[in-house]
Image 1 (cartoon, rainbow, N blue to C red):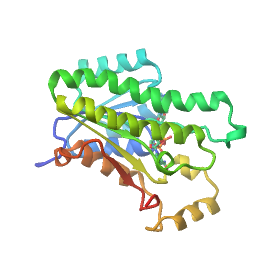
Image 2 (image 1 turned 60 degrees about the vertical axis):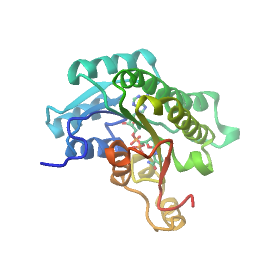
Image 3 (image 1 turned 135 degrees about the vertical axis):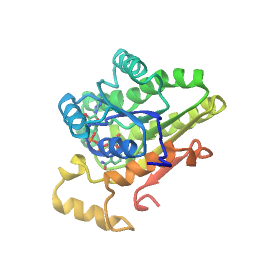
Length: 247
Ligand code: NAI
């Protein structure tokens, strides 16, 4: 296949075993990338590797909130594929509760994965990208981080934090040849949303000017654009992929 947009690029997709990450793994593979599924969920990771059955796919079990685990993942990727060209910081968790009911553990767990995880992966991968003078780093923010969301003090904080981190890295890493951007998905049809009651999902649809929720492919395509050379002058940007719910 000619003109594939990520031909021979090595991409680490954290949280790649499920939901948006899984759709991204498939999309990147179609576009010629060598794809690393970096995920905590060993079972889903193994299933996906089986399904894809490609020498261009590698599953590495990782806990992004653990710096040593991230270092080991990147080492395995370099051993297997020789380099890292693209990092998609997609792993994320929720532990929803309203402010007065939120435990400190609820709060901290979300920050550990959604902020520290992004920090750990980016720091480790950026070191290699700086040496090469080239790379793409894309992080998942969220509508919740842009305009807040009921029951998500922890999650909204974490998703706003990565916007600040993205803009800082755009300033620090631009001169090193590294593009840094974020995607802010709206409510997207993954297990997270499918677990919600039907009437809540209907209300969510009604709030979106496009009158539908996002699909994992909608977000995967935004990651793909930002990871491709087509977006080489897009930098420090937060791309809202949300049917204009935050407009
Ligand atoms: P998901 O729950 O379907 O997938 C998340 C993946 O991250 C899972 O495979 C999980 O095993 C992995 N993961 C969790 N903690 C990890 C850790 N410590 N280390 C490594 N992997 C870990 O979630 P979904 O919906 O696909 O979300 C993907 C990203 O998009 C997340 O960052 C989420 O916050 C964000 N997002 C999702 C929205 C939605 O409506 N689904 C809306 C806005 C943002």
